[in-house]
Image (tube, rainbow, N blue to C red; front, side):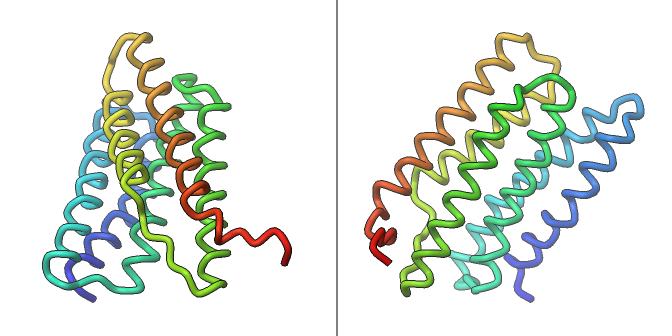
Length: 174
């Protein structure tokens, strides 16, 4: 297993640790969760850079890296929803977008086409992770609403863009 894939697996391992810390709820658990989430998010950027710069791009990494990102983000958003910091409808938009884009990629792959992550998808991931980090902090309610708005807007934009750019992958006659 190469370095990039090891970092991806580290992120996968950090997800249940994050959830255990957040749901344990000991004094300061939210800040420990913040550190775990921030470190896990950092591994996303580092593993991608390492994979591309060192020629360590693998099929495993292409599959596991975005999956790890999705589960990390969804875990945090579900916790925020349970804590009353994010409305369920906003979390649902993120979850539905992830399923829809994954489904689009599967349909495209069945047709022999690979849909790589686009710029808007990368912006969505980065801005969502930054907003989640901010939401772990004791910020004013208006800032939490702003973060929720950013997450929803970039999620919707990138999802729509994926479908518009890859509409030929959806053959409605088959």
